[in-house]
Length: 231
Image (cartoon, rainbow, N blue to C red):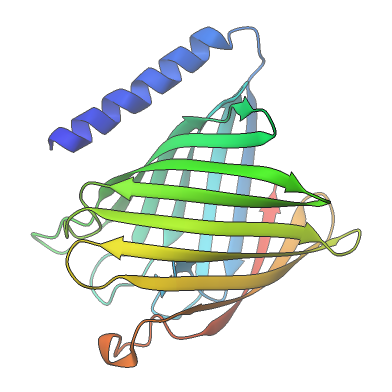
């Protein structure tokens, strides 16, 4: 409970400071909706290998941002939706574009006694690399999904345009968990911009989680096809 209060105070402080510091900047609002053949988060299917439908909204004021996002989930119980809220700011330090934020993952219709919700802090940065970008990110939570203790996720990522409307991107991540269960995950995909609103992503996901530790095959290699609209 203490960590939740600290996280909430930090998010409030970030937003308050952002509004004050960027009072002369006009706010911008954007929306996104999409569907995919699966919802994979850090190598794990969140929909029991079934399709995903999602949507979100983002508010930007200068370098500060806040937003919300929802998606269906399937954990084999009554939980049926994930809702995320987040806030942060994106300053520039020399050639490095930073992203410092706070996220809350919430879930609806949880089983009695379950407590899946958790907070997570984010520190990410990226630099230009030719026509593409290279980046790194660090996420930390004092109490992970299902109240299973602290967890840290570290990721290296990159993207590169291949043609006018085609790009390639990928990431390599390490999830460190309290106790046993650490693992690596990676993904590589192609994106195609149909127009300024619609885009398609075809991505391969995999992990090094042992089959004996994943009888439901939620971490096995898979190709995910997604369609997204941003406006």
